[in-house]
Image (cartoon, rainbow, N blue to C red):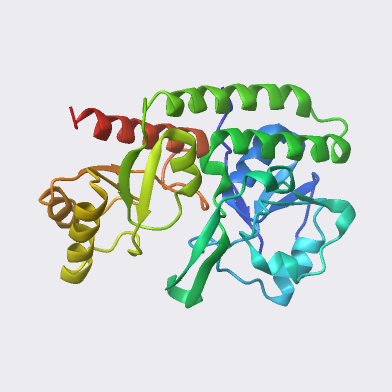
Length: 290
């Protein structure tokens, strides 16, 4: 079992002191993988400030300088952090873990919406949350391990990779067992779950609700219309909703599950435990349908 990362530091200032090699990651999943692979041999840092979405965050000059100084820069790729296509990152010390899964990316429609401080932006081109298919996540971890093996020759990366892959494979098997037969229609509160749906037998229609905020009457009406159109009986929240919101969705006859998209660190636990909890909630929702 992979131990949880003790803490993920966030970059601040133009540079950082380092007693160990520093790995900077553009998003939480690859940061978690890097920490699991490195163990105590490196310090893993998230480029994205706490509470910010990596798909819409843009680093300032001092943050870019700090990122450039890292011993290894780890990207999810797949269009998640578009600032990485414009910043001058050192090629020899940058690993794009998404390159190996490029043939399995999912094309998406354009959806424009807002994320608080970042303002409006669009989801278009391809779906970015590749790690929600744990088979793709494992392939990204393998690509990262290859780069880390070169950057950290004294670290037990190969052994740690075996342990990480075993954990991911066990969770993947749990997901595979959720649905037998035709995909189950589901509605999600946000367009983040394309890979989860494809991997684990869910036909997901997405709304565009803000995480943690109760839906208004118009949004509930849109949900009711989507339920009627799709035949969905399950609703996925990306974060724990207010109790009134849960009650309103339940009144529409929908079972509910909270599945964090995990682009940022979960409120509790780590990538593996949060994913496991999400699958457990989904299993309970599916079982409640009879």
